[in-house]
Amino acid sequence: MPEDVRLPDDVESLAAFLREEGVPAGARILDVPCGIGRRALGLARVGYRVTAVDANSGAPVAPNVSGIPVTVQTAAVLVATLSSVTPGPTVTMELELANSGGAPARVSAVTPTASDSTVTCDGASPAPPRTIDGAGASGTPSQRFSWTCTGSGVTATLGATVAASDANTGLDISPTVAGVVVIFAG
Image (cartoon, rainbow, N blue to C red; front, side):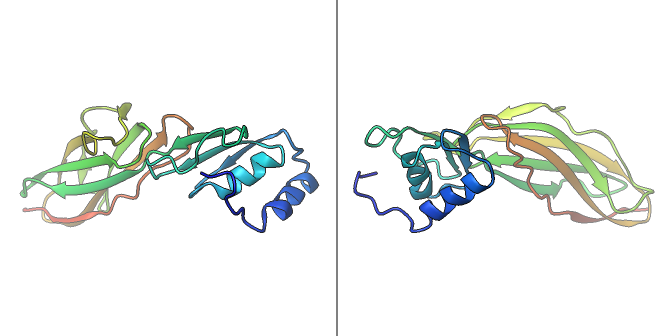
């Protein structure tokens, strides 16, 4: 980012607000999402230690521009795709979690869900925790999880809840998993 980049008009008012709230210059600030990093750079110029994080793996802020330190990190971004594989009284579900962000993602839990209490589901395999590398030149890394659900003569929405975080920052990046309607034979 060039030294003469135009900073947002609100950097001074943002810095004043931080000081009023008891956050003095020199404190650590996390700017998420940082976009192209103009606020991060502006806050660093007025004395804050800034970490700028964005899902854009193109590293939008040049670190240490004009001697002003800004730590740049790209965030992990998980996209979930759920599908049913084998219809019948027992259904195999597959969940693919793809990381399109630049940082690794840590998946700590994948829990199958069913809208009907008579449907039973086993645990997801492979069992978490799992780390999914960040996207890079080799494409978008992903991890597949599968489990089976059993029911009889019911229609149910099957889904999953996922607990995940950015492996670098610890920020919650748990994706929303859309459910799949399944008719169980019976």
